[in-house]
Image (cartoon, rainbow, N blue to C red):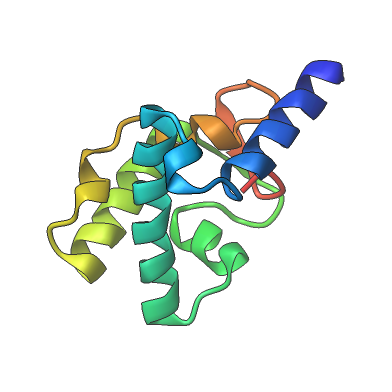
Length: 107
């Protein structure tokens, strides 16, 4: 439980950090999520709707790899060629319990 709380704290703080305070990995993941937010904004989607578009139904889980693949398809479709497409393993930061899948709650 302590490890999960620590990962949750890291994930929450990651989204609040200024660019200059981020590691290179965090900056890359930040670029990915900024592009994914553009997809959400262009379509008027909520995070729950985006999760569904990425292949998850309410109460289900999606592997990090499936999420990454589907997210990159949506980013390519809605944003064109973007630097977020080059980021690898962007969903690791959201896998709070380390089980290799992302639950809707984690997303």
